[in-house]
Image 1 (cartoon, protein in one colour):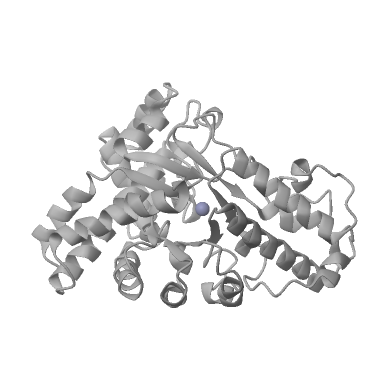
Image 2: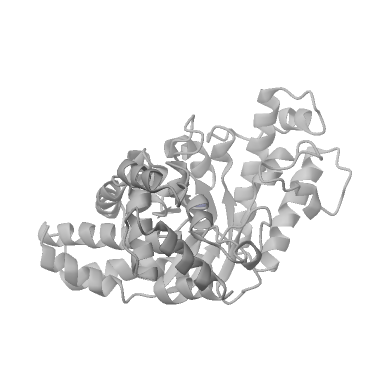
Length: 398
Ligand SMILES: [Zn+2]
């Protein structure tokens, strides 16, 4: 890769205002007097190691030595350096914590990072356990309505994994017929759209396999209000819910964001959505994370189905090197109008870290493609603008 082309591209990328297509940003009340421990615990690095005791220098040193190869860690600590002017060192944890607490005394601090440092113009946010919340900041946050609660609601008193009850959105509180249940789902989605939701989100890959069979109303009916329902009947119920979500999204003209890859890792490959996507040609599918680590599946879906978009959120943060490869191959098999990026984080420092990872990966990928003769510098800038802003505006805000 040509370093000077990479540097010039990075500079141009850092001038682009961003429409962030997937985030879980926390509300103000959960960020009051936040410190370093809160950030580390609410960030992806916590999935690798819990934060060390900042008074124990040996523990801090071990934490650094263990995690320096990890991309969440690498970019989050780069974010701390940029935002708070403190370099990564076992001796600096307490000072960093003090600076963060001082900054968070101002309630607008976390929003300033998003708007000024991250250049986020709009954020498609998915907030549990308040699906559809705009965090009281409608100028910045545009909710994606998480639909997972409909899958658990075969039992009225069964919440989704984030403790949200689907029936809190329903007008009828006694439902005995699957058709009535599915029309309540439809109405709930229409209401959420009317309240300002710009997308639907399904993260059911954390709970069940991603293949959704044709609706079998008889089988689905057997799960409704039945605590003894078999696994097969519960799956059939979920299949019916998923098809209703896709139909409703098509009618309302809003995209369905689907978590792919990772999750429970069992049966979460994007290609498992093949029949489902084929059954809904009028629904816009925004597939998240490239199906990491099963990128090939997403390439195939992008190539064959023009109603499939790929959101590259999380990929540069999971593995920056894999992301470089993903940007190149996904662009090669599809076009420049169906890729987007979101930070997929809970806190602003992590959002900034995810942004740094993406900017690096995208600049590197485009520099490699220029060197390979695919296109010139100006067209690379055009692609970056499409991925970071224009594609998202057209998909969610047109
Ligand atoms: Zn997410």
